[in-house]
Image (cartoon, rainbow, N blue to C red; front, side, top):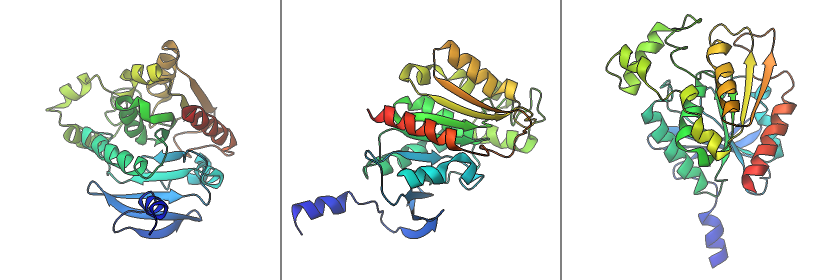
Amino acid sequence: MTAGNASARAGALCWPGETLDTWNGHKRHLFDIDGCKAWVVEPEKALPGKPWTWCMEFPDAFTARTGVPRLLEKGFHHLHIQVGNTYGCPAALRHFDAMYAAVTAKGLAKKGTLIGLSRGGLYAFNWASHNPGRAACIYGDAPVCDFKSWPAGKGKGKGSAEDWKALIRYYGFKDESEALAWPGNPVDSLAPLAKAGVPLILVVGDKDEAVPVAENTALVERRYRALNGDVTVFHKPECGHHPHGLDDPAPLVELILRHAKAAAS
């Protein structure tokens, strides 16, 4: 084997023990990372710099409406690691660190698009606030941005009592009072993102009763603009929490492409 062939093999997109299948018509690599099931979908022809999207929870929900298949066609990779229903807790963030290290070691871009659907907003914003230099942009779709709103239900929404108990356990809070006093929700952790120039893309149903807009995306938008952050919001006036995405995701695709290009420059 020549030195060039050895180098190419070392950088190949494959992992020990992986299996292959297809996802939305593209080759998918399934493997284990940090004790979790993970996968990477490979485009037919990657764009220069190998940009990527990462749906951090619910990767098979409303996929076409989020624009991910179109981005795959344009040359993006697409990622996911299964950390369970853990609400973006510290242990989940450590698994995300391991996933990021694994894919960037294979030559994928150092910055990518984080997708947070619903409670996945906690995953995306929490990880990005700790790693602002690794996010080309954040696409939050009806995202939970304050767990006091959901699942705690301390605002206009009814929340989820069982999820609230589970969140307190996963975060390691001693009780509800400590959880409610925690200063690390996405709505409180925007400054590192704004300082790093991470653009936000928010898609919201204005009639969302599960994750009320006023307590989540509207608060993020107002605070991020006050920090001189770049934020684009798509409102769906007659929509509730579902369906995620847009009837025509072309504007999402265009924005993500633009932000990925800027992050690579």
